[in-house]
Each structure stands twice: as structure tokens, then as C-alpha cells.
Length: 376
Image (cartoon, rainbow, N blue to C red; front, side, top):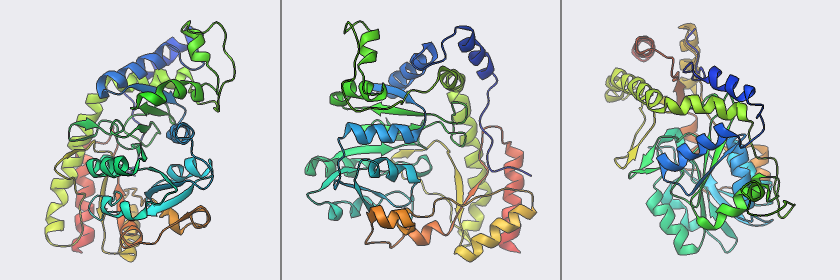
């Protein structure tokens, strides 16, 4: 069986983990944490990068930093993981779900402005499959209405929009280092990118359980105390050590995944030209990171049959999110008026195996199985 995913491993991670253990520094913000954070600040030109235990934690930090309060409204796509919504619901916000574009599966930027009310506080674009949302338009809308933008770039590490790293365009950005992502910190992990200076000092406080502990360790205060809201948003040094091994090989991982993505595309484009399936679309201004390769079947019934067939061929495939607005919690905590594409497109999508240790020969074999299904 070719699995849907295997976490990336370069081989150096275990050495760095052993190094972290030998230094007796396993709690957060040790040498490996600082090295990882500096790497992101320098490579992606962001004001401040702070490692977190997960992208969920980074999103929850973002909601606190924006002072989201009960009855505030936050606009985001329904086609996303539950953490995108939960982070703001936990602060009492009402979620206003926007429809998606069928080409990229991203939030439809042309639908956002009509959803804004006097209660709207923020827009949360989600960069699906590491392909950027139309950020120029989104940032213009936010500026016009004095709103914040939090980029859910969980899938977007190493992707860009008009040359800018995803996660660095909005006021705040959030990354994931879960085991299914291009880079992992040992199964879980995340990062908060602070792009607006006014959030930088408070972000460190929120991350340190609401204390000014980070200022204390830099000698900026003579003692630390509880000064604000916060929680335990520091990952362990073990997670950071694992991630550091991944970052050292970031280009190697990225190059190989892009090769696999292109192999899929070249192997299946003839089926698309026959109208038998649809392949991913990447707008001209976007440089993606090959986070995933998916196809779109004609409808839900064909998708079910395809997944079953590929399982018989010893290939594990997966569909993705059930739109949040259709879930019981989504109904309770949010609203959605326009569902032109979200549900129907979500029922067509199938994700194919994509991971660092996947071989090009295996991708070619998967393509042959796909061809046999659609041409049978």
C-alpha cells in the first residue's frame, strides 16, 4: 500500500534531539527554538516569529492579540479546518462564512466586502494547498474598513504571493508543522508570524502565559509578573530540535515535492483535456510549495468509487474538509448565506499521496492507476 502521507525525515533530526536532551534544556525558547525563529525572520522577512505547539495555538494567540470579544464577527471560508474557526469562537466571535473560488478552493475575495458589518473585526484567508489567496484585494478591503487580516498559512510554508512569503502579508500569519505538512516539528507544531509592530511585545507576553517573562530573561525588567491574558503557547525544545533538522533541508524537501507535483500534473493532464477530471489551478502571481496534489471528480458518487478503486490498487487517497457551515457547531457559531461553490466543490476533491519520501516511480504508478479508472 502506498500511504497517503509519511512525515518528512531527513536523518539529522535525531542528532539534534539528542543534543537538546544533553543540554538539559527541554522547555520552550531554548537554543533550537531561537535558531528556528531566526531562520523564519531572516528567510521570510517577518517582524517576529514565535514557535507554538501547533497552528491551532498560533491562531488562538492571534485571536487574543486582536482582542476578539463576544459578538465580534470574523469572515473566513467555510472550507477550512475547524481550528481556523474555533480560535475565534473561543473568544466569543460569530463566524461569517464566505464562499470559495472553484479554481483555487480559496476564499472568494469578491464576496468578502458584502459580508462586512459594523461588528466585523477581522478577515481570515486560508491559503489552501499552499496556493495564495488574492491578498492584494483582501488587504485593500481590510484597509478600507479598518479590519485586521490573519493569514491561515498552515499549508503555505515556502509559498509566495507576488514574491512575498505567505503568512507575512497580513497583520498576523500562522503556520503548521503537523506531521501531514511539508515540514514538521515531530508530529505537531506551529508558528506565529507577527508582521505588525504593534503586536510584537504583547505576542511574547500572551505566549508566556500572560507574563513578561521574556522581557525578564532579556534583562529588560528586574522581575516578571502576570500582566495580560495568555496561556502556555511554548513548544518544547524537542519539537524545535526536530524542526531545525527540517529547516536545514528545507530547499531539498521543497524541490523534491515540486518534482512530484509536476510528475502528477504531466501524467494526468491528458485526462483533464478529455474532460474526465480537473487538476489544481495555480494563478500566475502565486508560487506554491507542492503541499498537496488533488484531482476533482465529476461528483460525490464518482469520488466514492474512485477512492474505493484506488484502495484496491493499493493506493491510499483521501478527501478533505466537510464545510464548517454544514456542521452542528458551524450552525451554532456561524452563518453562511452564499454556498454557490463550497459544498459542491468540496464533494469532488480527492487528495493523492504526497510526501518527501515518495518516489517519482511511485507517482507514475499512481497516475497509471488513475488513468485506468477514468478510461475503463
